[in-house]
Length: 121
Image (cartoon, rainbow, N blue to C red; front, side, top):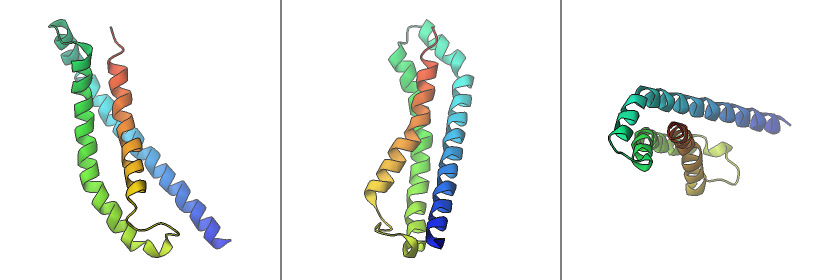
């Protein structure tokens, strides 16, 4: 019973931390896009097409994600080794879990914000 409660508590805490991270990344990307909206409008007025402006926004978001991945993945592996006694049927270095988590959850806010920017006309 105690293991089940601890597992649920850890799952809840991890989910909340992921939500806070996603909201933070979305907020930083939204603020950057808000600051660069005039630049995007000027670029489009001077002849830049939507894919180029979208690429501009996505590259800014992906740079932040790349920095986060370069710092976060080694820390995640190190933390996995520290808590390896509590992991059941998962190694401390699980490439599939790290890839899915990093890819799906970190790239989503940048893509959402780029889509919002490119919907103005």
